Amino acid sequence: MKYIAAALVFAASALAAPSEPRDTCTFGKYRCTNPNTGIEICDVAGNWELVGPCPKGTACEDLPQNGFTLPFCTNTAKVQTRNGRPGQSPGEKCQTPGKYDCFGPYAIQVCDTQNVLQFVGNCPPRSHCDYLNGIPFCVASV
Image (cartoon, rainbow, N blue to C red; front, side):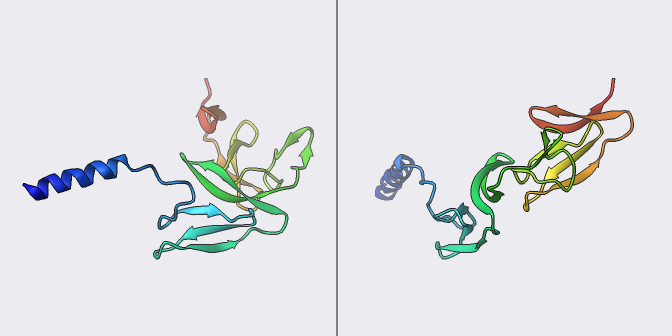
């Protein structure tokens, strides 16, 4: 009976513990360095280790990615524009790595880790690129 009571007290104290702060080192967790010049990962021993520095002209920034916030080295310079629309074609600069966009009405492109737009693919026949909840999809043309 003593052991059951002790286990219940331990479980209650664990539930009452505050949630871990952002910079708590949990194996496999990533974060930006301080200052934001690179990306670190928490190793198996619970220490922050440098994954690598950000390339020249970029800085580490936490960005939303698939429901999580992850560090990316992003271009700190303003995006070049063409015809008043930033990043309209593959090969042009973009600001948010991992962000997908429509490439014209019939294709999809993505911003890569070097802040350059890359062609993903064409939409199938009788479909076009449109945004659903802010994400580009190939949808049936009516």
